[in-house]
Amino acid sequence: MADKLVINFNEYLNIVEKLTVQVHKSYKPTVLVGIMRGAAPIIDILSRILKLPTAYLVIQSYYGKATEDKQGDLIFARDISSVAENKDFQRILLVDDLSDTGLTFNKSIEWLKKYEPIKDFIKEIKTACLWKKKSSIFTPDFCPVMLDSDPWIQQPTEHFEEIRIEEILKKHKK
Image 1 (cartoon, rainbow, N blue to C red):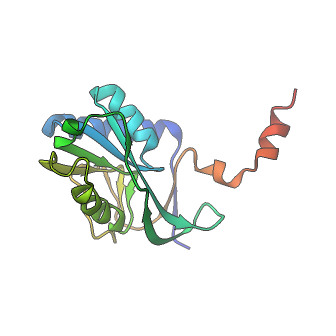
Image 2: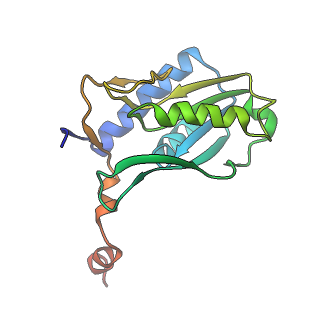
């Protein structure tokens, strides 16, 4: 088992703010595309600060019942979920929570470039994440934390994967 890096909510928000600053200083995206589920909270914050439309690309890449699941084959959803117009996809900022192996970023860029409704509007795709692990073969354009190892990163909401609804019901019983 690799080391575990436990991130609390305040640390998480601070890293997202640093990412926002990096992007703002050198790139003017026209849409944010988040790789789900990891990018969901990041995209929410970025879109509020940068005032940009969002799109969500759902990819299943991990399997198992525990928090520290294994990465498997990538399965892409049929479509992007977004209310952004096709013309908004000129300068895409593709966001994920981390670059673990790099496979998800590489395959997502390929998928976007072939995605029929927007492919002819895309002029540029840049990438962003909060953490890049040492062994990742992909280097994002924007990343505030470049790790010198490959720890499991336990993000602030990840503990919910280990909790059953019965525990929550019991906790909030009135």
